Amino acid sequence: MGIYINPPECSKEEWLIENGIPVFDTPSIDYREGYLPVCLVGNRAFTAAAVCPDEREVDAFSDPSDERPKQWFIVPIEKLTEVCPNLAM
Image (cartoon, rainbow, N blue to C red; front, top):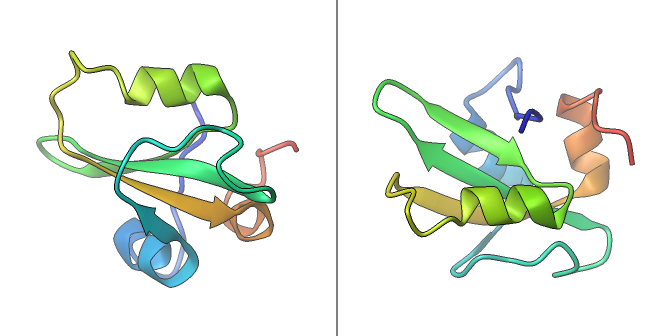
């Protein structure tokens, strides 16, 4: 695991609201062409917005034994590359 959204000029939550589409169940990697799933995970002290570029990442963040609160988004890859330069697609 390792690609996270950390926009420089706003919170990750604001960025996801502006650039993503909320989905109410765990999206698959091929949910919509040109988009990737992003999981906003609530940790105790902070949130993390994890980009899921493959099924392994989706599976890891949708593990039913992980009880942290989560919200899923699908986000255009072109928008993700603006805030995640290490996202190689």
